[in-house]
Image 1 (tube, rainbow, N blue to C red):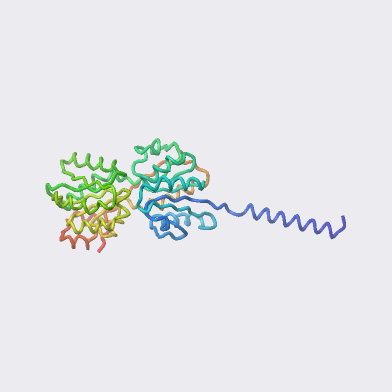
Image 2 (image 1 turned 60 degrees about the vertical axis):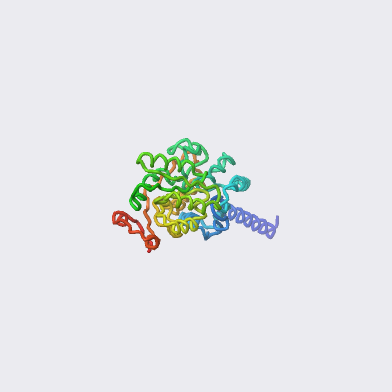
Length: 330
């Protein structure tokens, strides 16, 4: 081989090694499915409009994942139509994402039926054990892990706060839908233990909201407890407006209702739960199995009050509640 041919072969070999080395150094682009309530378009991109999903994406960035370089999301949202979740879950599973982050309740139930292989991170599960998603909180044992919201455990506390706001023998109206039957049963048990009367306002579509509030008014309900399910959260602004029009002091479990004009909420921070979900995603992408990652429970519950709404209702808030408030919206 002459000198020029040898140099040419050497250069070509060096370039091949360089290209191969560069290819090996390129980071894998992970695909993270998102399944939740609301519009899928609000979950998409590097800066999602949905605050909870945005908290997840920001937290992934803090862990070193760059959107578009290390990961992209595959968002799916029901738009407030719970019947869409089975099809949306099937769509996500067909894409074979590396992991799926899902809102608790019906989205997780749909994914449970759709796959036993793809890792699922619950963001605010209701009762993962009772729902059959995991074997136990300490040892999930399947493809589900994540964080619970502990809404069931705080129902009694919410009722007590509501009775401080609106004491008396008048029944507490409870707004709920079939997706959260478990929450309604817990509310019944909590009220029975305290000898308080409840008025069930079960709704099966948003078109029944007005009728539910009419029923509460006719029954002379003294206050309202809203249990967040498939129908309540997407229509939180309408519910807050109907509660105000009906002159009903209303208690919620999510601050988003108070931000939409509701009176008071008590519960874990949903955005914080989605933010902490990023830690589970990170562990799974690095090889951890959901079965071995214990379910995390919130340790902090926020009491948020909307003083503007209280004033509109002509309601004087007890000092005992104001002093305990974590945030007051004026």
